Amino acid sequence: KIENLEGMVTPGGEKLRELLQRHQPLLLLLDEIHEYVAVKALGVKVGDSNLASQTIAFLQELTGVVKTLDKTILFVSPIKQSLPR
Image 1 (cartoon, rainbow, N blue to C red):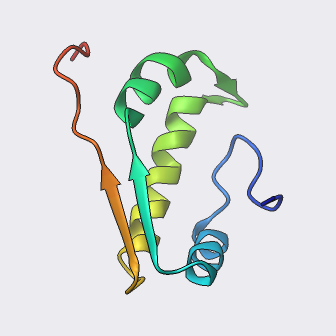
Image 2 (cartoon, rainbow, N blue to C red):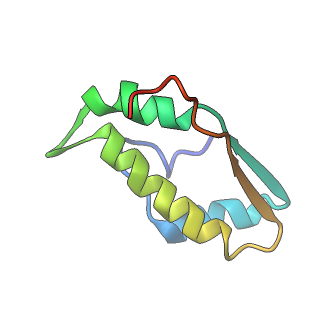
């Protein structure tokens, strides 16, 4: 169980890097993340923000960390055409 990364706010790049680096090689698959952010997370309040904003901040940190790791790949499935634009 990973307890130091629990919660609704992003844990920060260093904690992510430590976690991912320990478990390389890695293939991270994110499926339907766009639908989650656009539909489900938007309505969840997190402090003065919402879970959609926190998720986007996390994804920005995650992509920044992944590009520095030699044995980690991040794959995000394409956006479905049925989502509102």
